[in-house]
Image 1 (cartoon, rainbow, N blue to C red):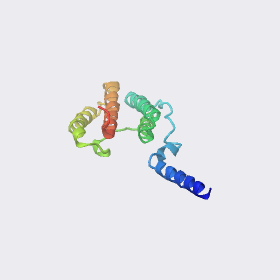
Image 2: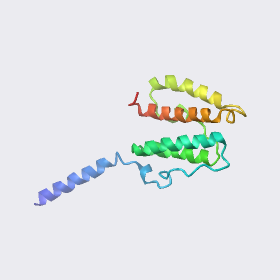
Image 3: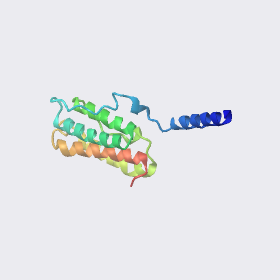
Image 4: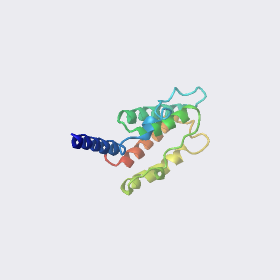
Length: 148
């Protein structure tokens, strides 16, 4: 009987320790896992559109149990919704395979050029913010590397 109990405890310990590799600390961060509040009235149309797009992608990642990326997108949503400028994800911020960087790096350069300048974020705010959000999603998916 002692052997059975000892074996069961050992198996349970091994299972618990192996689970540590799949537990995401972000899942326990209440602030990071709280969806963004609505954008403030002081946010520009560009920032409100970023807020909406990042909120949506954060929710999608949360539903997929990708808590790290949900927190990442929700953080960007909260910042843009508060009226702060949020740049697109630089590919160097993520661990992206070289085969994806051949497309992402030039796209990042084109996007940052399109977003530069004093009036760039006021003119065509929604299409430009949509491009930024989709670019960030593209970079996140490229980092995962398992979806075409």
